[in-house]
Image (tube, rainbow, N blue to C red; front, side, top):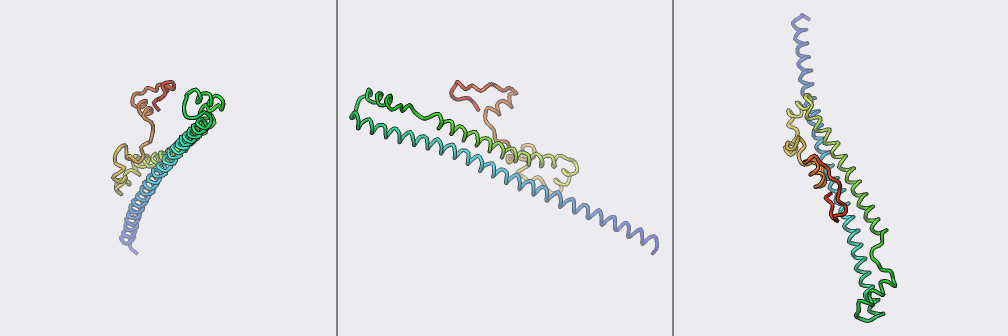
Amino acid sequence: MNSAAKTGITVGAIIALIIFWFVSSYFSYSNTSVDYETRIETGVQDNKQTLGQYRLGVAEAVGTLGLGADLQAESVTKQIEARYGKGGSQAVMQWIQENNQAGVGQEVLAGINRQIQAGRQDFAAAQKRLLDICRGYQSLQRKPYSGFWLRLAGYPSAEYNDEGGNGKLCRAVTSAGANKAFESGVEDALDIRSGKPEA
């Protein structure tokens, strides 16, 4: 085999390797983007589910508490009417003092508070998992080599092209007070005594 044939084979092999490298890099980064976007979309759905279950749980607990209070008020009214007849706030006050029906027990309120705190912790953990995935995808987009291949493959998808590369799907769900603190650069103490502190 002459040297021209050897050179031709070598050049052909190099071109074939370059084409193989190009095609494999393209598909590798395209598949990685699909994986990231699928994980982000699934994470968003998981966050919605976690937040929805938390909110429903608290609403149901408070609703059950309200139902219990209504049933208790109805029972108290019937007992007072049976004992004292219809009328007289004096009789009602006397009955309440005798039976110590002062309202909702602290243990019930503490239970609802524990449920709220547990729900918040579950949601915070779900948010952290989603934001970790988003961070990985943003990092991949910003690196020169992987970013080149992602852009060449048409990624990130259109819905990811706003708000820093990951769109609304990677937006952290937070409170109005936290947003205000980040915008102003100042964090104020919560005003617990006002009855409605800004969260």
